[in-house]
Length: 303
Image 1 (cartoon, helix red, strand yellow):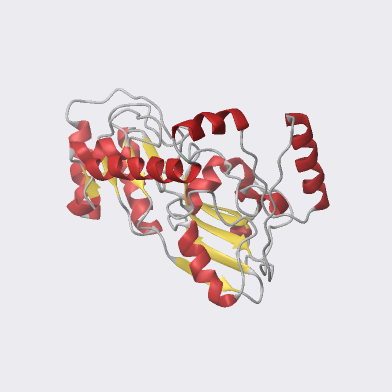
Image 2 (cartoon, one colour; image 1 turned 60 degrees about the vertical axis):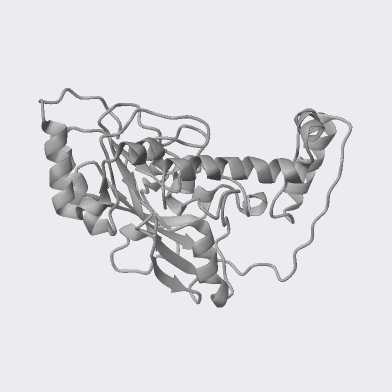
């Protein structure tokens, strides 16, 4: 949804003012420090957006997109802000960024038919916490940064992590989507396109949902998603091994994957770890790196 356009003088200010009337001034951020914060990911910074909007519902988001569309301003969706791939960084000045974090409701949990429907601004932690009392979870259940990362962000970036050893990427666990297009219209995909049924499996027949997954939000903004549910294992165990060569490591990991018994597999580069361990212990290095990131972000924005 990012595309540079030629704008009439004052057009950006006019759109921002209309968005403030629609969403409330407190949900249209224009302060430069706020905009700089939102235009960064873990490693880099993008162009400075004109404003950041914070819709609270699909209906508010649809109305905002409909308002923005005639101006041609680029629209950039953003989830928890934990990306390190430039996935949501604005490419053009005067973009309108969409902060999805207020769209964080669990809309339905059906443990009997094994599906859950959520707004895509919910974090993986909050989703897992909501499902735990029901004794179920999604097959893929979060990236490494799942405390902050959102469902929509993982679906947009092809995320693999928790649960991927058996169930693949995040996109393989989703069975239905509501996607908002640039003009504010809602596109119902996968099981959500089944008007008269419950969304417990993806429909048979033409299904264009896959093209909106792992697209970094470029084709539309994910508003609602439905995932299938499974019952988690009763017990978890952990094993650690070392290998002399990369070939041996990869062969072992491939064999474990074929056995289909392990939820996650990780490998650490010994050369990179040795460099880090010379500076400080692994535990201290991890804690200090995270603390530095948090401190930098807190300095850029007061919560």
